Image 1: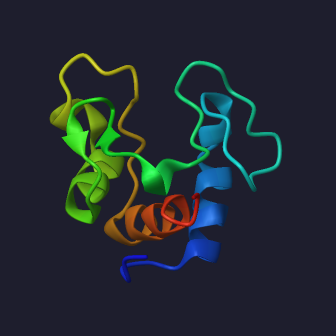
Image 2 (image 1 turned 120 degrees about the horizontal axis):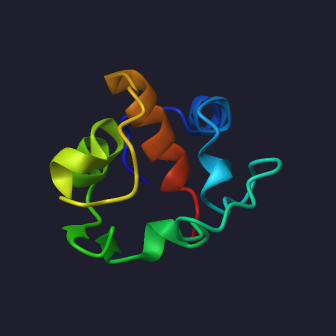
Length: 96
């Protein structure tokens, strides 16, 4: 797992920003959304949003500003700080 954030803080970031309103996310209470893809097995996926390689630098950029990475995406820019994005990414990479 990449070492750029804390997965436990990332779990809290994901809960605080209510990512589960759109995504099903293992380990996040109430994360049963159906708008975005389920995030179970995220760490094993080859792509992010179907177009970006699933690499730490791409994930960090995606979490900070999805519309700047993929034109027309439904995922909004939530205003995550660099630290919050790193922590959220660290949590997502625990999802095998």
